[in-house]
Length: 71
Length: 299
Image (cartoon, rainbow over all chains, first blue to last red; front, side, top):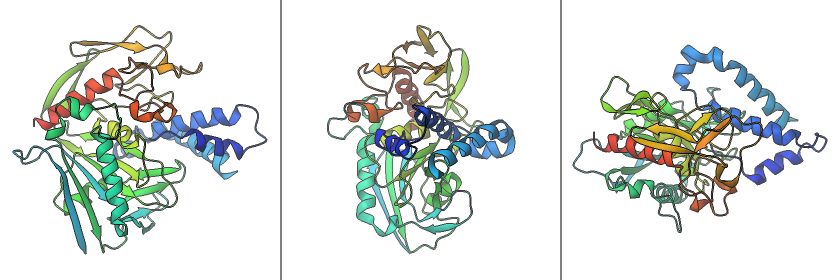
């Protein structure tokens, strides 16, 4: 997965002026980790065998997406 | 329907199935990804932009960008054996079959539709080990890749990674796939190729810019040991300082020694380098990809 650029991170951080210092940076770090890991799973195998194992990570990814990009 | 297929690098013309990288202009986009809803992608209607994206990507893969340091495909003698083709088809309807990428909202990026990519290029008699679908999405530009699904029942060249027996399989069930935007620049094509050319079952190459789970190029644990791994008869040291970027305190992952200790590795955050084109792969990624590609070009 392509890393986010500094400019992209800054743009997202600026959307959250009321966040605690470092909060959005930390969320972005976790978001980048989860997006990267998302593509580590063989998608065909995941459907059959390991969906349960990756489900919590995907739920967390969705939570972070909503916080960072929808609010 | 009009089909424009170009051979950009002929590869090993003595072989019926040389190792092949295909760049295909994406016809339709699944928007959003996994929704079964499809819209047109403007890429096939802009052949000049497609050609420019392909040329940049090929130069990036083969180390031909001005001042580019990483020459993996050239140094190892692999370059002359690798076939590169492009495919642009106009006049096709928007459909599930012609949608080779999805707009993945949660990811904020493009996602490969790898089975569709494989089937699509086969319709035009192209067998490719790695497929880049190039999109002109107006929503997302962030690229993503899936590793290759190897044919683990097929032939290969055995190797041992830190005591674990694996095989550089020469055949695939599903090729490595990349969803790439036409505006992708910097080292993004080379970075994504690192993922796509690797294997889900015989060694993954992962992102190093985040606290990743273990892969060929990434291990986890603290304290960081001096030795990273062994690959066949070679021993690799760790990168104790993460190319000057430093490991964040809350990370458990660590990386292999660098070829260029002054800059991030290609699989790390190359955007943070003084000049991304000077970034190199780390030592084990370089060796692993070279061995894997050599096995494939010799099939």
